[in-house]
Amino acid sequence: MSKVAVILAEGFEEGETLTIVDILRRANIECHMIGTGGDMVRGGHDIVVKADAIISDDVKEYDMIVLPGGLPGAKNLRDDDRVIKLLQEMDHAGKFVCAMCAAPIVLEKAGILEGKNFTAYVGYDQKIETTGTFKEDIVVVDGNLVTSRGPATAYAFAYKLVDVLGGDSLAVKNRMVYFNAFDAEKEENHG
Image (cartoon, rainbow, N blue to C red; front, top):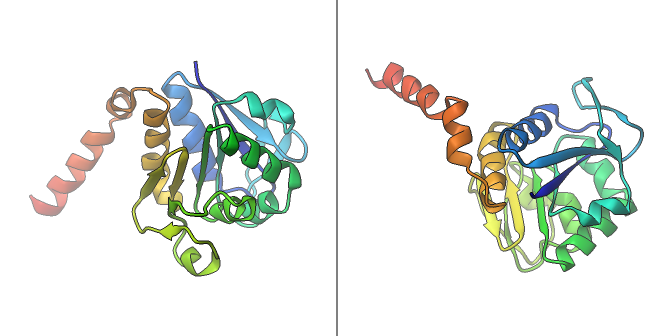
């Protein structure tokens, strides 16, 4: 079974984080929230989440590392040398390195975006200085790198994480009424 570490720093984006963790767990993928400070981590909207573990070298044993966005969460991740080291080691090992919203700034500092296609929050193409190629797609996969845009793209991002890990996102989408919800919306707007 695949193991995923979702890294939480003070000021993380709660909606992104909990959506990712929820969907991965629904897909029967082992997923842990890893705190960079204590086990209680305050998000950007004052929602406090209890991490499953505290950051350590154990994260290197995971198959995927995921960085949610949010400010100042993404900056706190970027400024944490332990996070940068883990990202570099996992990327070098060919493991999945994933980030969304503002968190690609952390990947930039780790040197992971060089020569890669990626996406990030609106305007971050101007803030990230890399030889990588910024795309406006909702989710961008380039080898072991998976990135996404922002809070509203968290579902698409999480489903893609399930897919790249070999899980069945379609089954999760069906159980979550993903398609019916959007079909109903289309009917209301066009019917």
